[in-house]
Length: 477
Image 1 (cartoon, rainbow, N blue to C red):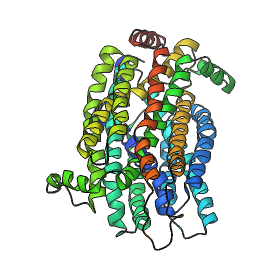
Image 2: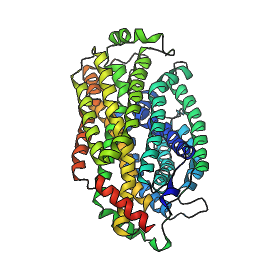
Image 3: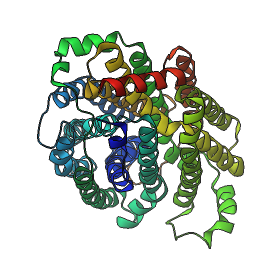
Image 4: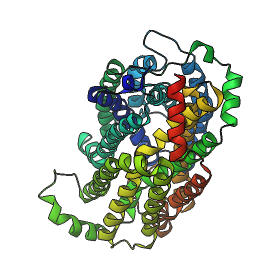
């Protein structure tokens, strides 16, 4: 197949990107609100919240994802290997996402059991949907520049989902439930489930698999796993993905606590007053402040995403990724030094952090696709889904560890949950818990990012090797 036949239309790029928009309506909700939902809406303790998110998440990461990778690589239908899974799981994923954020009136033990069952099903279906979706980017085209372009489209969609969830969802929850957060969450998630299902179906109908392994490239599961553990770039990317999503889950899941408990409400009100006439009506200053904080960062992050392809094509993915990730981390650390009244500099730091992180965002997944090419280049066998499944292990493992750390660290700092509060009395958090919310958006999430930057010094697929791999594989195919 010639490289010209790997060119993608704008329609196909948009259609593919809608799949990630749909998945991220679920994923961004998990990152941003899972711990908060369990502790402050559903009424689980910090200990049980930490245990549920960690144990279920790690089981899903290390069982569901590798299994799904093996199955997807061995799926053969008239629609291809990976596209069918997007079709088959679209509706079940939407229904399960709605159920996972529902609040049935069970006993406390019943609530814990319901959380375990629905969260397990949600992660199972998410793996069955999103792993083949991610692997599809490795076979939709063999042209690395087209992959960079596709990834940019994809992560603009990701940022769109992130923008909705982090800017408007908290306020919509308050409004949809008329102050009842449980009812509001159920209503919002029902609509997101419907919209996400439609988007996944569009992805299925608008995409095509083009990179098809030759019949003689068939391999056993043992050979696929052997290839993985001899693949140094894969090991580094697995570790890096885990570290990145630990940070994203930790800081993303902590912002709502940070604005409710740490940021000075008087200063926040004064800061927001000039903006109120230009913005939609929000329920209160906390929801508006959180929305503007996240929204401004996301919009600036889109500029970083737009520049990402240009930098990656010129300097190579590894170098650009490492530099942008390091600089973005400096602005996370800065939050440690801000007192509650320093509202303006909080917003400036968020904007600068998201600009540099935005540059790195699309590069992660194109680097994983490059690792699949590297494996084929070295071993003359292609196992796209199992390589992407390993990255999904990192994503799910990082999400689980990060979300669990949010609840666990809050518990260490004495955070009072809905379940622990005295009935009928307003919850007043102790000073230690307020300090804990500051640490959760500054020092703690910076650590995994910095370790990840260090790992990139050992990643060997530089720009020169990228071009050589692409040239050699085009000749073979």
